[in-house]
Image 1 (cartoon, one colour):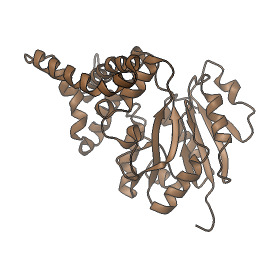
Image 2 (spheres, rainbow, N blue to C red; image 1 turned 135 degrees about the vertical axis):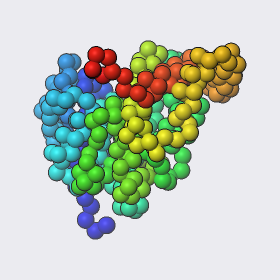
Image 3 (tube, rainbow, N blue to C red; image 1 turned 90 degrees about the horizontal axis):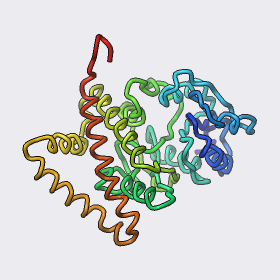
Image 4 (tube, rainbow, N blue to C red; image 1 turned 120 degrees about the horizontal axis):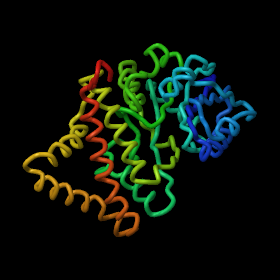
Length: 312
């Protein structure tokens, strides 16, 4: 490539005061020279997020009256001046060469969308256990953006970078699939080219710090995935029915057998972590059923948009 493209970085936020400072510092430290703007799209923060963003050089704060993350990304897409659109979350820190590697991957692969892994940054045994569960195969499945792996084609990636005009052409982000807007967007982007995982694209994020937070997070994930399946039935893959089947199995006459089999799987999946980090491993063993049962319940709840009194 003789002329490198310009880049817009978009960061949707809502009450990210604990992390937005380090996030923006990581953005400011990028090695890529073609970043023309950083758009922070705020969904109505009530903490000090807005004050921490205001006045930073090259950063523009934009209002998101619809509050949800998909709406924030669509607002940023409409405003973007860069040839390439790089999404960043307010609670993650991208590596200094993150944007550079995203642009290189788009150029070298010709992919419609590129991204890398989400590597957890945990403090304390409970958060270490949560991080281990979320990055394990038994916890989150085989997706490379959770566990790492060799570069190649995938179904979806963490965050994502893509050509701005292409994203506009496919209609931007769906605002009716809850928090599964990334995966739903990737489905439509795959109709225009590969979605590419690149092991050189690196970032870290801070996972939840409580089991209650994990439960709420994964219930939303499951419910939102169901909304995507209703919209794109062919997107459903076998591993996504495992958690709903587990929930149904625990409610069935075979619940004791299901519970014992699942407990054995949790013990086996946590064993290596327990050996290296006993406290973290025990937290992982508690996190796995929290994730799976919450996701499964959310998925079952989201499969049918129940209505009461004519309303959802």
